[in-house]
Image (tube, rainbow, N blue to C red; front, side):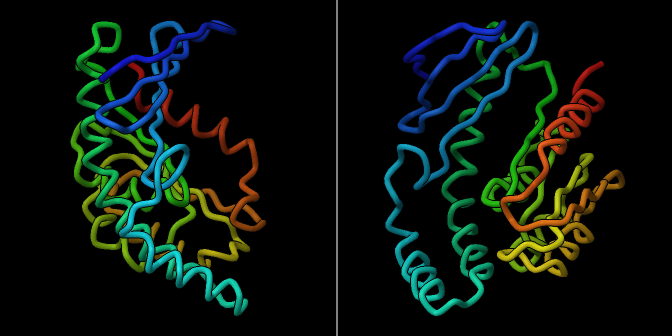
Amino acid sequence: MRLIAESWGGGVTERLFTVDDVPGVVWAPTEAAVAAIDAPGWGGRPIPVEYEPFNAEIEELTAAGKPLGEAFARRGVVAAELAIPEWKATIDALTELDWIGADGPVGYWGLSLGSAIGVPLVAAEPRITAAVLGLMGHETLAEAAARITVPVEFVLQWDDELVPRDSGLSLFDAIGSAEKTLHANPGRHMDVPMFEVDSSELFFARHLTA
């Protein structure tokens, strides 16, 4: 990990970093830390060549006014294959820092593409002990979802134009966790209410603090 910038405001230290060539940021209020990294092809990162056939398909479907969900899901499989090793390396690097340490629990928050990556990541990474997921369907994720055993809060938009309702419900059903909660709200893919952020904070406080 290479720390490249640091700022302070509102009681939170913000540090920009890279792990290998992956850019990220860690926000650290007192006795806590939250980190994010750019997914392959998002933020300031170049679009992987592996995305090209899916992006071409998505352009064609968009021009024809056809549903995009299945194409997004297939591209999400490739995104996960690229991003999961990056997330594992990031967790390694962060937990080696003295002011974070390796003893604390780790949570994961990711909707839409964040769930395409997050479902298989949570299934494969034993350090993650709670997760907020959603806005994705079951078509490419059911097998990984069945291997998740940690508490999950799952967000679903009832009128999602990208993820059919039945597909989202099937993914929730496929999650193997004994403790899982479905949060369904009316609206389209991008209409998740802001109060779901508050709910996520309470969820992590419940599961990640003593």
